[in-house]
Length: 328
Ligand code: UDP
Ligand code: MG
Image (cartoon, helix red, strand yellow):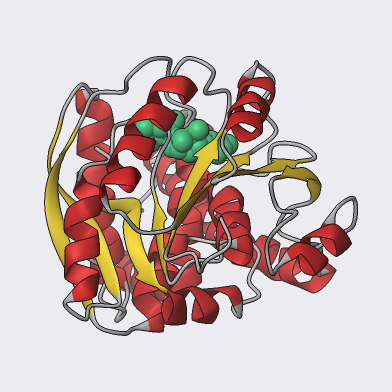
């Protein structure tokens, strides 16, 4: 494929052997129907199953498919970032491998892009086959995040979206390490719109987002876009101080009227424990920010590429060859 690539489809993969072939088939079908040039960029995020071998087989039979293999698991957001760094298209679409984001929706996104929008995100109007816990926590989280930041982050959207080359270049230029890509897309601005879709059940396999990874992503979102948790921690301090003063004065007044002293040990201990909890919680919140400052100061790369496939005939050949086995 020599002529200019119009669409880059970025697909992060972590242990997706059960869905990869079907995912490729559906993506290919949709992209062929556009009758324009495209590349499908699989980013293998350190999978431990057959994902790598299977993706390499697909690359061997189809040179519109490219593969980036990480040296280990760096996480979903790092995989998306790598895909964007190496994407060649004028429009870049990020989509999950598990077919929860229906590939056919990409055509609606492309239509909006052609109308002149530079970001078209997928808005989930319904989520099928996900646990009540996941749906509830996600719904709450997006609303809390929105209330915490002045950046206009659309609720109920994931990373399934189309971005214009301009937006992609703006994102690539952001050096931060603990990336919350969907928040950064809102932060960079540009003309944004959405298409609605029903989030499907996972085609096969299990979620690759266990609770620990979900919490990390949630904190990345909040810390990268808002200082509010630190401000709230400060407010707790003021509240506790005022409560202490009130207690002290009521005690003094009681003494003045010669009533028996305020000695209730259980109450004292529980108040103390509560205040300890609040203090440690506030230190924990500070830790979330300090840890991220530490990550930035180390200046380590967001990901390390071990190898790539099908990048040989592209204009980014030089760049990719230089990146392999080196630190990005
Ligand atoms: N993923 C990844 N690295 C990870 C975890 C997930 O590249 O460490 C990929 C995964 O293969 C999938 C996408 O990110 O294509 C979304 O993951 P998943 O479907 O498991 O998340 P969920 O839809 O359950 O939130
Ligand atoms: Mg999924």
